[in-house]
Amino acid sequence: MAKICQVTGKKAMTGYNVSHSKRRTKRKFYPNIFEKKYYLPEEDRWISLTVSAAGMRLIGKKGITTALKEAKEKGFIDKY
Image 1 (tube, rainbow, N blue to C red):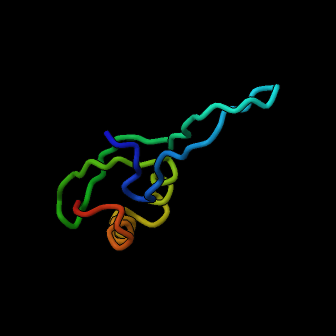
Image 2 (cartoon, rainbow, N blue to C red):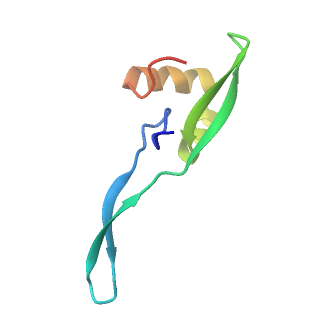
C-alpha cells in the first residue's frame, strides 16, 4: 500500500532527526494513513480508499461524493 492519501494527496516528507549536539540524520515523516471503506449511495456500492485522518475529516464535512469529485479534479484519484 502506497502511503499516499487518495483524498488530500498527502504523502511522505523528508527531514532530519536532530540530536542534542545538532547532528542531523535523514528521516521520513509519514502521513496518518488508513484503509477505509465508504458507501456510495448513488451507485449503491462500497468503495475502499487509502485515506489520511485529515481526509476522513474532509469526507465527514463535505460528504463522500463531493470529496471524491474534488480529488479526481486535482488528480489524486483516477477512478473510484
